[in-house]
Image: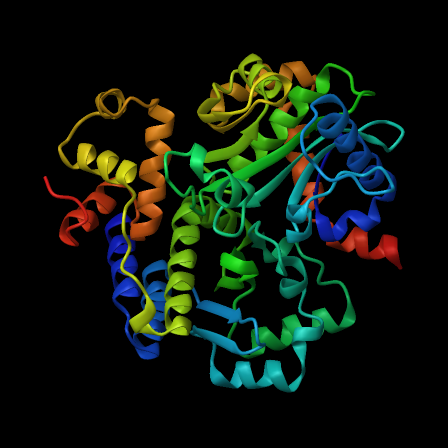
Length: 211
Length: 237
């Protein structure tokens, strides 16, 4: 199932949290060879994880991480505006209707549904928060995945070559893209909305869980 | 309420005093026919800045009872950025229940919607609407006005940041060359497809450049943004 979790709430999901940060190290450091920092616990974290981002996480049946991505509003500090403005034609991408999406990560344990599920999560965020665009840092594989999902990603600028190539790109999830993505995940829209609302409504349940 | 939203955005932007800022919250309350509109920001050194239509009796009461400690709205929004419908929050504790009933006594309505706002360098503010409506009407209201409310909240926030920095240090918005080219094409009445082809970019990229310009100009939509860019001389056609 999909969970939408702010960084400050991650301590309530220790297994999900730890496996996510380890899978990120595996993907970005080991497989893609990006210059990212890995802690001695084998976790990849950066300064944007400290800004209370919202993670969309696919949880596997055993409670571990199947895939995830990280969202921040572009009215605050973002990776693209801080580090990649040379790839955006000198335009600072900032608006309450645009969020940044970074650290798209798939677990090696993930099945084929996960990339569709993450796409769905992004689409739900867009629909529920009046968003018009996502801006993100892409690697070529993600670009292919987004295309497969019918999101028509649009890369503004690129940097590097081969596995280390990254691009800054835009994407959006229109209403028409929901049906094929839902079919890939194998759920209906009502279930998707329930996952979303369960993540945000039950502050109550979380408080009970701690007590 | 498109035309009204444009003029509300205009009056927030034109506000040069706290009184004008305050009046803008009252005008918005009247335009939306809700009970209250409140903007609230605690800055980096713990100073509170805010304006809104809550009675001073309620503000005093809130401080006196130290409701900040238990207010579910604060817990549900703090350092976040997803808007919160108050009824999603947990009001089940004894303290929260008492606070809610107390709020009704002090003239608040039973529904609320709070948009947490994240600004530069970790800045955090809250923009709140409060109303008396049944659940279905309130959901429909939020659905209908959600986008405008996000834009209005951010416009109040921009103004608050401007007040904090002091008027003389605030630079008027400028457009980057690409934003300027995109807005000029819109002002000339080009279609997005034509404009994108002229600039040698995709239509999606063009839309994002226009959106970035719209945000800088504090406008409601592209048409409003073009009007503002023209009137402030940022583009010339």
